[in-house]
Image (cartoon, rainbow, N blue to C red):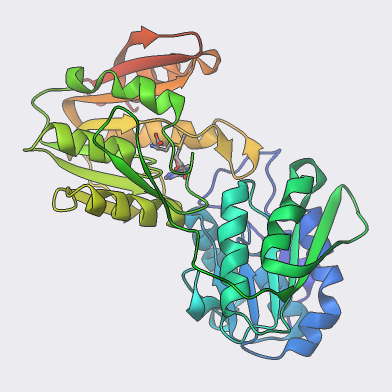
Length: 382
Ligand SMILES: C[S@@+](CC[C@H](N)C(=O)[O-])C[C@H]1O[C@@H](n2cnc3c(N)ncnc32)[C@H](O)[C@@H]1O
């Protein structure tokens, strides 16, 4: 059997951003596995679900410590899913778990859930509802995280779906919430729908999607420039599409354009698909779950729109944004344009200039900057 500490020593975050201050396993993962140990040992094969495992520490730690088979896994982020697959392959544990969407297939008859708490309360609410709806009536939910990301509101959200919610004693700045006694559930609250003020666009949002069913203020600012974005573009990409507002607004305003909307979050991709369908542009908006559009061919797009993330997982880090700019440089055709909005203090202009091409500031308000980068005729990524 694989020894847990030895396995943790070899875990990698790849293909997610790797850096000295970013870890593949942390104190909250270890605390979750310790607090849930007795329940995991008693659960049996096929009765454990793991939700939003970072890079495989919970799934592979469970399998290794309790020699379990049939662990059911859902990770919102594709980078986490790919990292788990790589780590499982390296440890020879690929056949011990299966990947599922958030829903009945993941949770039916499950008695133990290990869960890394998401930061967004709406993401927490949708997952808690799914567990209460589909898991076994005696399910024990071990939901953990780092103290700095936990809030009292999380207990309240869990209490909407569970009769009992208790906090563990903290250890190394981490804590576990134990939820039991799933409550009877009514109509699902998610996905949510919202018609945007002053726009002919109705948004559909699953809980974990960025900004929920609302229009982010950075995105609103970028939308002001829609008409000026490469008017002759035929193929466009909404990179990090969230609920798909940029993709759908672009498709609505240009009847001839084809848009690919891509995000690494399962909730985002499901939301964008539903938003495109509801607004009757699904025939021209293709939605893909991908890590920074790494699956898109070279020289295949005329226009990329991006409101980049400023987080990698829970950590504030520019790694994901930089990875996106790098990919934009690869995927844009010569003369193609990357339009970006970002918090002015982040000052991405130099990076975009290097990775895409000539970059001009097209607008600035009190908080945000909008830039246009034009892919040069030579290869600017060297
Ligand atoms: C600031 S939000 C913008 C969402 C949407 N475009 C909007 O304007 O409302 C950034 C998005 O990038 C996505 N994202 C983060 N890292 C990513 C990656 N490596 N690959 C693809 N998408 C990523 C996030 O899931 C999130 O939906």
